[in-house]
Length: 159
Image (cartoon, rainbow, N blue to C red; front, side, top):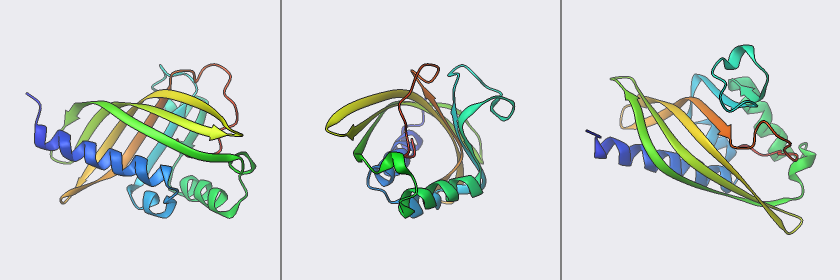
């Protein structure tokens, strides 16, 4: 039986994270992470050994901070023509939970507008969330892009 209260809390957290990214609140986004948290975008959506394979992103704390610095500092050339991103999160399912962590999988449809053209990137996203009092912190986020193993145009923002 699904704990609906927990599921609603998880949904609210994930929706807030998506909103922060869409509205470029990157410093607030960085605060959502545990110290050892890892942000992963594998090339192969079926991959599970992320540390020993090639990924689009495998960011621990320092790399997340550097990624944000490039975005807010204007050093990410590929974002200069991205006018807006919109994320739609859905189909939430709690996979595991214990006293310390909740693992949830959901879908994401990310749309970007660049030069007046809209592109959509569907993905499955798995979060390992650490329970922290009455809130969560991201310990691991894995974004499995539906088309990750084929050609992707330059994506210079945080998925």
